[in-house]
Length: 250
Ligand SMILES: NC(=O)c1ccc[n+]([C@@H]2O[C@H](COP(=O)([O-])OP(=O)(O)OC[C@H]3O[C@@H](n4cnc5c(N)ncnc54)[C@H](OP(=O)(O)O)[C@@H]3O)[C@@H](O)[C@H]2O)c1
Image (cartoon, rainbow, N blue to C red; front, side):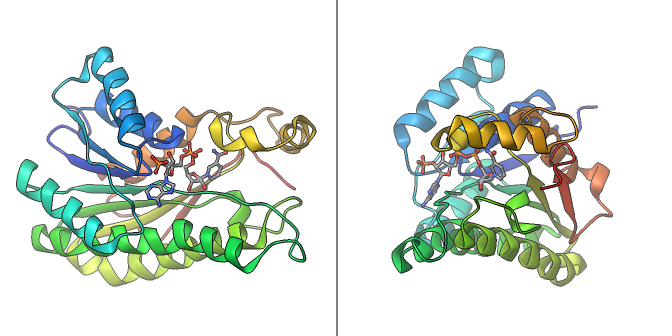
């Protein structure tokens, strides 16, 4: 039997690289997946690509801004009404503005904190009542190596937001365990894809050299870790962080 057969999965940050790779991996394993993020156009495009790969009928999207709490509640409730349950939530939205603290503005601090942590809180808060009712839930947050240790070239806003997700994971793993809801987190290192496109080639080369495996990660490698933590193979793992970074040391 497929690991995700019959599972209803909501992936936020849904038009992004990690979200789409995770959707594909979970679809392969039998899930029904609903992607959400702001850009209806990109969501539609990503869904079409997945449909063309043979997943028509199991891949859907609901557009919305994760910073709109009422909108998050509506999305979670629509999923429950339409598909009967909400088994898995993967929160993959995120942005970066990497600048030294003396250059970083207060607006840039808030922008990153809002998307990277407040909107994740909104999505989780919207899903939890449904998961409690089911006495079942799997939540996976997407942190970053930037929230795990001090690193060159990372903004304090990004580091604080991603470290905040680790705290959220640990606390919620503890709080929600009695309802058979697990909460875990992956912390990827640098992955080839859209997010790194704002960095200089020199910065990217330094990142590659810093890994023990001497290459950037693949989004499919982050997706594989998410697929493990959101599955029942990890049913007795909660409040944990899984680093997926090729052994990046600095
Ligand atoms: N890629 C990496 O190397 C890497 C490494 C470590 C950690 N991470 C983390 O992994 C997560 C996903 O990264 P990625 O590489 O997949 O990035 P990505 O391709 O840039 O995707 C991020 C997605 O977040 C969505 N988003 C941004 N603001 C939003 C909002 N207010 N409401 C709803 N959705 C919003 C965007 O979709 P819309 O524009 O459609 O809203 C975007 O597609 C992020 O949290 C990132 O910090 C990535």
